[in-house]
Amino acid sequence: MTARMPESDADTGVEAARPPAVLVEDVSFAYGDVRVLEGVNLSIPEGRFACLIGPNGGGKTTLFRLLLGSLTPERGRVLTLGRPPREVRRRVGYVPQDFPYDRRFPIRVRDVVAMGCLPRRFPWFRDARAVAARVQTALEQVSMADHAGAWFSRLSGGQRQRVLLARALATEPRMLLLDEPTANVDPNAEAQILDVLDRLRGRMTILLVTHSAVVASRFIDAIYCVNRTIHRHPAGDRLDGEIMRHLAGFEFDAPIAQGDSPGV
Amino acid sequence: MFEFWSAVGVSTLARNACIMALMVSVACGVVGSFVVARRITYIAAAIAHCILAGMGAAQYAVRVFGWTWLTPLHGAYAAAILAALVIGWAALRASEREDTVISAVWAVGMAVGILFIYKTPGYQEDLMTYLVGNILLVSEADIWTTLALNIVIVGVTWLFFPQLEAVCFDEEFARVRGLRVEVYYALLLVLTAITVVMLAMVVGIVMVIALLTLPAAVAGRATGSLGRTMALAVLLCAGLNVGGLWISYVPDLPAGAVIILLGGAVYLGTLVFGGIRGRRSAVR
Image (cartoon, rainbow over all chains, first blue to last red):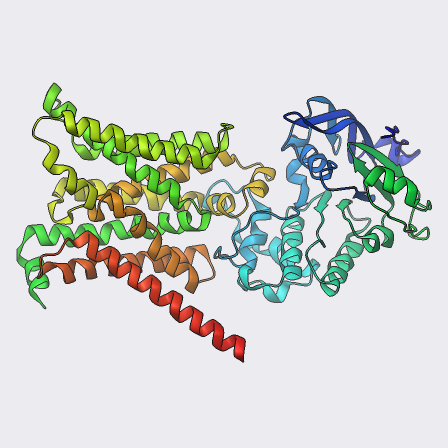
């Protein structure tokens, strides 16, 4: 495999003064003997919409967990929003790929979204009205406000993903990490989720893991291919099938919308 | 048919049994709902079987060392909480597979209990009481202890409900939000341990898992929130316990077994009813 160093994402001018939303320097990580990431470097400025693609087992979810502070790199340095990930993870919204949730778990949509307002230390410190307002706002952002009292278990796959997105938004994040949010939903639900992301674009840094060429080519600023190392495609490039097969293990040929891209 | 209710009016034994049956329902409904939602019923079963070790060790200490201040119930609580913490540590920290640890704790707890009972002079006859329970033997001291522990369980649940709910629903998200998942998980297991000991007094060690889970499982099918599931499970458990006592009283049947059979019948009924209703709505 070609281990190319990524091109720097750091912009000049005002953005250069602010720490990047994501800074990964020479990071390696292994689960036991299985090496997942090797000497990875990555820098993404705040406010960008970046897409991570790559084969299963390529290290995308591991990279997310490093950015969230759930895992610690065995070598190298990870900074999220300019700080060690554990210190700022409450400002990072996370939508997991497929969490082991029990279909029969008795919980309403508003209670799922309210988890984004945790931790609330004790009930007597709970500001129920403020929590309810945040939940309502988050549900409106994903067009699910009408379903606040619905049973989570009775929602469709696409609706559940939007509720999980609302839960991440209820954290009032500066950065949003989405791990294949459209993987198990029909095209209609996928379009609704993408519309939500389109509306959020520019208001926060968004990192999206996807296998979908439609998603990757629609409105993102840059594509990063994660497969033990990270290879960056700047906006305006065409994803060359040969490179993608080499790095990601699958054919992937999609133009990146130049008009939407501020150039990273 | 009314002999049981007449007995409750005049007999301290029957009255104590009835009060105990109602009181354990609170812990059973509240903690059972967490256990079913988090799918840790087998952990609760392993904890239940470790009770025997605690009861056996306590009784051995009383007979052999003369520690008369110690009761089997003290031993049961200590062993259950210890087992809960060992399993919790293994589940979250150890690299060993969780099901293997649960099986090991389950069997070792039973083995230790049997050894103590075997070596305690004149004690073997009580083994069946522990295994299948006898609610008619509860004392007033047991009732006061159960009341105090119920207050602790309800209080802790009220204080930390959002955190416990989040840890049960999505552990990874809870961790990302900065919750100390290990602490809340251990807290949940300790609450489970305390509840299991309470319920073992009613239905015995081998049937405790059914009483802990059946009311919560039935309630969970009928409600859409964990809080309401708890409330309904408390009512269901109270109904099952008192109903079981009532049915078993005149024919002199073991109350624990009747309570469990009643619970099983209700659960089966909701499954069948739910299946029929599901098919009807599918046809429509």
